[in-house]
Length: 70
Image (cartoon, rainbow, N blue to C red; front, top):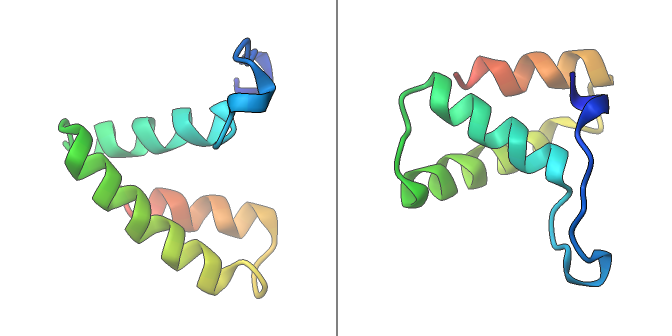
């Protein structure tokens, strides 16, 4: 599904890839986080865990880690 998402933003202004944003919003929605401030907190928490684990895990396991936060 993610391969069909097209990012039409001006690339010079992009801070985060659109696919990451969609995944974060999707995971937060599944975990009943419906406030932008709470989504930001959740995303920061997930990002810290991701950074700590990414050198030890392959891509499939990282996706499981993301969904483990849901």
